[in-house]
Image (cartoon, rainbow, N blue to C red):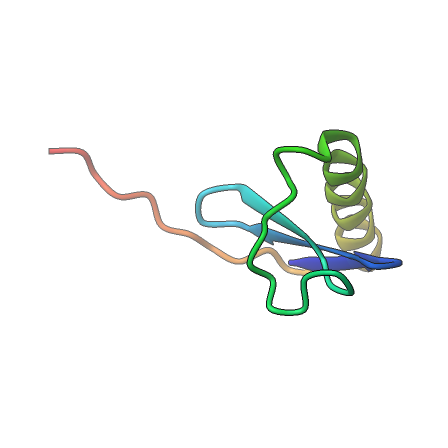
Length: 69
């Protein structure tokens, strides 16, 4: 899922629950992930995305669990 606020874009990857945060104005190529340095903004945007998904009734992707050997 993706959410954007101002210059910032957060990408949430459902397969491993990771996030990436970019300043799309200063970093148009999205090369510098800011999620580790802008922790509050990243958390706020992730929560905003989760709230929107819940309110809109969006279907979440199914990610099958792999078996450990």
